[in-house]
Image 1 (cartoon, chains in turn red, blue):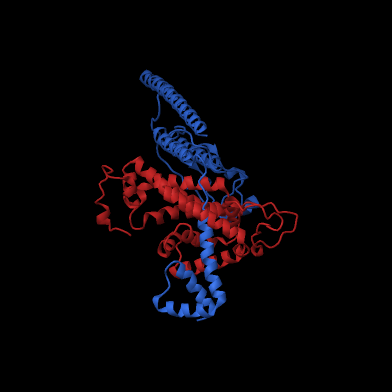
Image 2 (cartoon, rainbow over the protein chains, first blue to last red):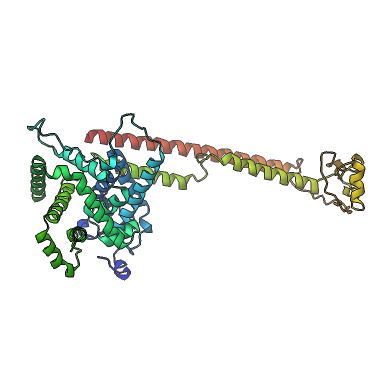
Amino acid sequence: MNLSRDEHQQVNPSAITGDLREIRDEDLIVHVQNGRRKAFDEIVSRYKGRLFSFILRMVKDPDLAEELTQETLIRVFVHAGKYREIAKFSTWVFTIATNLVRNKMRQRSRRPRLVSLNPAPDEGEMPVDPPDHEADSSSEVEREELARLIQEATSQIPEKYRIPFLLREVDQLSYEEIQQVTGLKLGTVRSRINRARNRFRQLIKPLLRNETLLMELERIEARAEAEKGNN
Amino acid sequence: MRCNKAREFLSMEMDGMVPPDSTVELEQHLETCADCQEYRSDLLLGKRLLAATEPELPENFDWKLQLRLSQTLREAAGDAAFPWEEKPSDAWAWLRNFGTAAAVGMAAILTFAIFVGPNDTSDHFVADSVGANPAAAVAEGGNDRLPLSRQIRFNGLQVGGPMQRQAPGMSLTPVTGSRLGLDRGWSGGNLEDLRIINRLRAENRQLTSALLKSQLQLRLRQAQLDTSAQKALDLEK
């Protein structure tokens, strides 16, 4: 929902009135432009989780993901004055994050990698290793373990498909927003998301037929639902 | 409808993007295709798995962000406050410095040569003309170098010689006229000049001292801020 620039200018920059949580992103950033730190804190609370989730699934390294999430938010603060409401605020934020992630991954790929002397199966063809329940049927698949398996599967999707896939699945951006973030054509965005979903399905297929894991998934969802109810 | 097309639509269906005129056709295909039904449930399960395994933010994320933000703002303020502070030198700085020094040096030599040379009212360039018959000159020297007796002289200083090449046919036109010397720079013996220099030096010393003091205070404040932030982090842990 984009407002026109005339409507945008009606935001009173001198004071924040009402509950910050009620203010939309595009108005909050106007307050940040006018030096209101509280408005920035609200933006941080809205975006930190989404950004971290997206970045971690891109770079796989939690420390690096934290660093890049913070860097994104700092850039939002420092360059707040450059934001113009020609695009949605979330699109602007995720464009910054995506550029940072791409640069970091490019830097990484230039660095020489250590090559294992043990022959490994082709990474692209390697399915996610499901937990061995035959060996230890009593052990419960923990959320962390499940998260690790999903992370492993996600990281095996090629980068050019993974970015639009995660922007859609994790951050709920619309096709048009993903188009703006990535600079791709709308048809390309759609087909890349489709291909990434297909690839992801192939990678997690062993997990999808695992009864224990599906029960664990239901438990996690029930817990999340209960927490949401408490809040 | 074929399975490939149906699967493309199933992906779009998850985002509510299936064209309305294709919905019925898709449903008809799904009724008869077990593989595509399985594909649909797998896509939905994949989405649920992604949502259920959303990573949690690291502890102290907000604190670390505030620290980094303060640091960034401090650095920005530092740049504005001390724009003359030395920046870390880059790899090619020496080359640029060398180039600048060389250019200044050349300019100084030229200035000296043109304006502050000996008071010579005779011809500034004394060159035995080889222009009249360059071929003969070459033949005389056995090569294209000028013979010793015909070296170019510049304000009485020899600048040409056996090692200096002169293109055949080139000749330097003698320039006549008075010396173009101008009285530039400090007189050296002028007491007023010395007083000004001494006053400026004293002011410079005072400013440098004040700057160092401010920088010291700033570093002290930074250290205090870092320590208190660290304590807060420790407490939170």
